[in-house]
Length: 358
Ligand SMILES: [Zn+2]
Image (cartoon, rainbow, N blue to C red; front, side, top):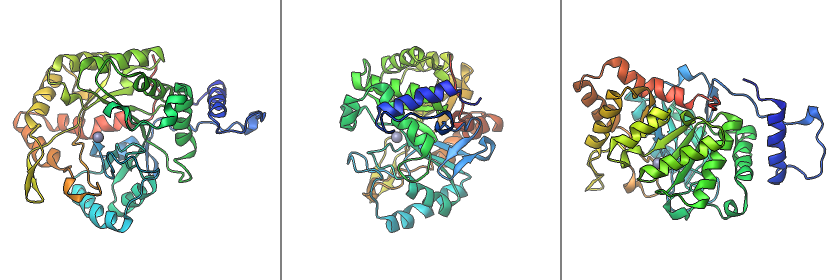
């Protein structure tokens, strides 16, 4: 559905408040920069694609990351080293049948959209980047300015990235990424969630919110979304596997939310050491509970892997799903159609730009 002029004007006003437009300038109708309507497409770093072309998608990974370093935007990387290390890994994932990856690295955590675009071209994989500010981690990565800005003004910055591209790159985000700690969530985290809801309302971008380890953090977000007129199906309970009891997950799914079981890991050897906790069975049990209750079509599966942190020894694999988890699902009598739902159809639906309003 095309965005109405009133919406465009409201956004324009917000941009003006946020300092993106010269103040006092009167914009004639013809010069109103509209939010382009990308409804029905998935926005990759190479531009919009048909959701049917996304293929087997890992919805929560970190192709590039500089966790905890709060670097500049775009984050600096040794590009030659990144290409040498990451392209072969992405091609290996391609050989496993994976065709798309969403990079959940938020700005200040190592987001670099032009480098992602290069990696996408060289590997042949669809890559999706994001807009948003990272809360959680006791809010130590929240940009200082976010405390001064209103939720509307923060949203205006994220909407600006979707409208005109990230910085000068012309590359658009394909979803909103933000993060909150355990509930009751902090005031700034609540503001970020509200900004995410406003961004969804204007753009139709889905929301991936890293959610602390308890159910109140999720429930509180759904209340904020409701206050902004946004349906729970615009929102993902990211890292839902951190809540061991399936009951709150089933309740969120019943409301329409996406449940992201995105930390699939088995212990593995790296740099001569045994790494990674065994989260396999927890993911399986939660998935079985969601399937039993009829919510398979709202589940996203991923690794929260990391293919390029500057310290290469701290890479986290992105192949357990293909090599271990799916075979186990088949042994649990998951049909090929159910596996397609989890790996193809659900990510395609989730990343399709679409306003999901109350
Ligand atoms: Zn992550």
